[in-house]
Length: 248
Image (cartoon, rainbow, N blue to C red; front, side):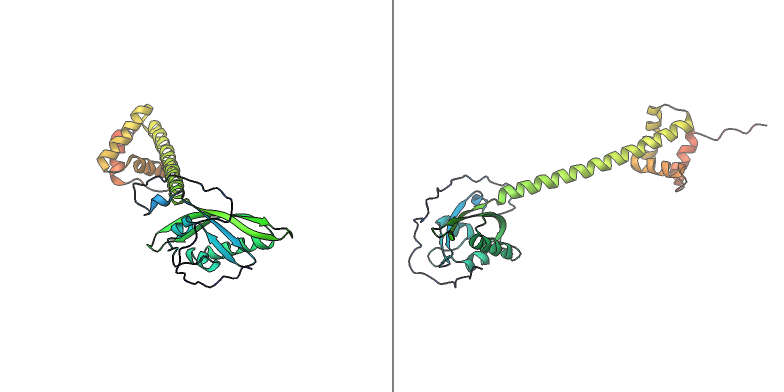
C-alpha cells in the first residue's frame, strides 16, 4: 500500500522539466453557453505525473497543478494531496488503483471527480502505467490526468434528452391506443365512420374541457365496466346516439 507522504511547503518553484520522455498533448476547450460548470476552458487540459514507489516521491507537470487548482510554489505533490483533491467517494478507488499498479504492475484508467477550491466539481480521467525496473519490480508509475468535464456533461445531457424522448413516445403510444379503442366503440354505437368518430371525440373534448385522451379513456373504461361515464360526456354521447324507440 502506498503511504501518503506528509504535505510540506516549498520556497522555490516546482521544476518544470519532466524526468519522463512522455510527449505533452495539446488540446482546445469547447465553451458551454449554459454555464453549468465554470472554468470550462480546462476541458481537455492534460497533466502528467510520475510516482517513484520506492521513495513515494511524486513529480507533477505544471498542468497538474492547474487541473487541481493548487499553487506550485507552495505545494509538494504526494499521495495525500492527490487524494485530498478527489471526491471522498472516489478516494478509495484511486488509492487501490495506485497500490495495484505498484504491487502487481496493473495499469489503470479511472474516471474521478475533483472538487476545486472555487466549489466547482470537475470530472477527470487518471491514467497510470507501471514501468518495470531491472529487477522486474515496478520502478515507477507514469501517467496523465485529463479534464473531461464538458464532454461528460454533454453525454449526460444527451442521455437525459433521449430518456425524455422515450418517455414522451411511450405516453403518446399509450394515448394513441386508448383513442383508437374509443373510436372503435363510437363507430359501433353510432354506425359512423372512423373520421366521424374522431370528430365526435374532439367535440366532446372541447365541450367538456378535457383532453381527447382523457375523454377516450373514460369511454373505454365505461365500455369495459371499470368506471361510469362522466355526466357531461354522457350527455353529449346521448345526443349523438339517442336510444332506439321502443316497438309498440
